[in-house]
Image (cartoon, rainbow, N blue to C red; front, side, top):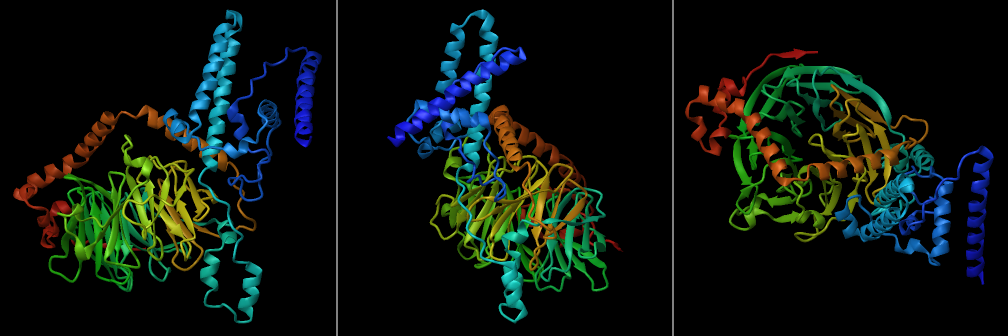
Length: 605
């Protein structure tokens, strides 16, 4: 009886609405609008919005009256609870088929088109508009479902500020207070820009705090490296890196007293700068040379004299500054017999003999330096890749990867795709454990990072110019900030001990973020921006889906990038073109003019 009474109430309310709408239009002297037929997909919308994970926790949006009426009409046609059958939808037809909802959407569109063909010519235009409006509603609904998929509910925060402060006053939990505060959700939600560091004249591509967190190194397209006293917003040292093209990374070597800085750049050089205690740069020296751009360096947490580098030539070099010839080839990344250009590398902080690389294909590769045998599985210990990307026709690359604080998790950001979390304890080829979405990674080689002393959050920039912070376990966005007026945020560097975040991108400055806002940030415009990023991503995927065109464009760009350096080497180095890869690693070769000077004058700020 209760079930029939509910349906009766829905029918009565729907009839009342249909009777009232024409009278209102007649009073205004306008014709009644044509009402769209309810579709099956309309039943998937949330009725109360209380579980919406994208409204900032307590800022849920109210469901519109039209959506409620569509839901009521659907209940009238289907005497069932459609929320039990909610599926995952994508915008493209292919994704719709795989997620179990695209077929229904297309059948609805076909029925509308068939009905429109049966109408008279005078009403065909109105019917076409009705079909287009229905398609737009379905696409928007598919986006809503896509945003909600693979998102879990956030747990209750385990750190209470007032309770923790009172405990600290009486001497309880003092050693753990700073670390627990850094990972507190309440502080992350209060991030606000604290300051801007301005001195570079080009895009800032790299940021790195020293071990104590008192200094911040930045490198730029202007070929300069600057050491900042970030708390006072003052540049303490500025020097010429010695590179001939964009500086991609500059990192303090651990336990070196902040006196040694390792750098890599688009010119393929790996250089080391020796800094003095009197805020001067004594020299920069080339210690290795890749035959292609070198995007990333990987530091060994306890070593002041050794690190790894990866380049687009697919080579991983091990650099040991204690040796006369510092660079040795560790491995060449391959898939079958094809070399895989590398964009990123990271050393496992818990097992420093292991490192992971990613680059110009969809696979994360983990190696163990103690047992690399390129005749067995190309020396790879483990490989990870999201299952749906294994056979993807699109050219998917990994732009950045990073280990968690204890080495048990590995985070990878894919170009024009999402961010995926893998458990490194799982077996070879295991599926991802969590997915983070909403941002866009297309225009540049985007970075990704963990935030928090126990890697509680995932942070990434985006082509839309915003910074996204996801809670790691739930994949819900807890912070959303505008980080770059130029439109792209590339670098995100958490402070090692404090709740501070440094970011940079296409703007010529560095931004410092801290939890100084009085109230949690309102995630205004988040859902709309996430939908916009998804739509643009799908449109670009369709527009540039031709694999041949993508390969041709990549080849032309690569040829143009390497054309000038090759001509210079041929003119000044003579026979170096025929040298083996190891010939580029000689320390003595850094004296050659075309590779940049060993010693530069540094300007004290």
